[in-house]
Image (tube, rainbow, N blue to C red):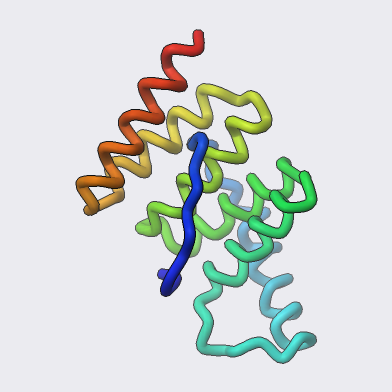
Length: 129
């Protein structure tokens, strides 16, 4: 799990796990870390999550979805990962995938206020039929 994070979510989604992509990305992040001199105490999911954020920042939504999916494979209990992937799916126009990730995030979260916000996002997105 990440320490302090700022989360701004506009959507969420759930896609089929990309096991091959996750394995490839995990190996790539280890290599990135050895080349960049990363703090080896950082969880692997954090490194992959960071790459997903960078992909979103540069507008590479497909890559962001892959990275967030790989991070979920590494840490399926991290609600933020589902929310960020949902955001990417919503930006891509994949409403059903976004809804699925929002729903998964609501089941993973233990924060009642966050769950309320997620449920609001689900209702908002579901009404856009």
